[in-house]
Image 1: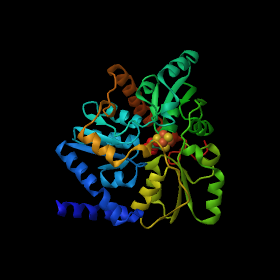
Image 2: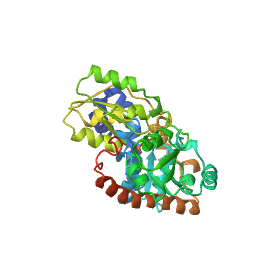
Image 3: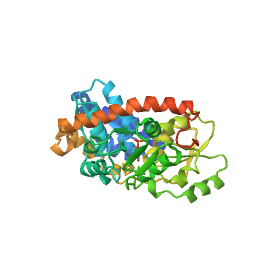
Image 4: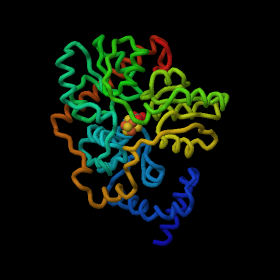
Length: 349
Ligand code: 13P
Ligand code: SF4
């Protein structure tokens, strides 16, 4: 056992040392990560870790690290019969919708200021009041909300989905700022719901200007949940995986990520030759999840941690996700025809 613990400390230090963790820090968590990794094997399980999780979760126990939708899709390709999704609750629900035959657990039933901003009843009311409008929901919604919408979208395909909707008038929910970003570039009339992400609404365009002055040549990347004024001032806008691709392919050396701190950690760990500058903001919901919660979810899960979606809601929510794939394809074709395929959030229409 001592040998196994020593090897685990070395493995952790190899990953977390780059992020400022000491060998002592790694020694403290090694018994927990070791036990979780053994339980994964025994229970034929995988751990999905969202990029906004802390590094001990991402690199200590995560089998896959990524964005919410990409991780759920990854799980469909993996033979494991159990998924522990280290993330907020709505992301666990999406994983369950895409992996209905698997057991899906979340270490904590953590909220999200966007998902918590709208419920199914409110969408039904919107539908009644706006019978001719199409309703598109961002993936940051609960299954009961997805079930009431015409199509779902992610930050990486929102522009394509909205452009391919058959209606001229689109109600976009729950993210007001993402909706305003869409309205700026879309050919559709977009009405927004008044939800915001507590992380991305917190960034100020002045911090972007300041970083440009201090670091000539810096490339600035922002999540489209940020305000339109800020999005207009950056080099790239997109979801977490889009940012990752941008940095991997860019010849630039210095980057600012206008997003949650977990992603900044991930970039520091994975792009050793690049410099990440500027500040980030922590998501209080994502950070509710601790390593001990993950261990507990494996050893003695309580009903609150096990995701169950009533079948009728699951079927309608799944339809909204399936529609997203269909519209994404059609929308990509449309954008390519208009010459905006590569930078949908920032290029003018
Ligand atoms: P992704 O969809 O890129 O995983 O982002 C999730 C999120 O919570 C953004 O704030
Ligand atoms: Fe929700 Fe924002 Fe946190 Fe993402 S970062 S989980 S959108 S509150």
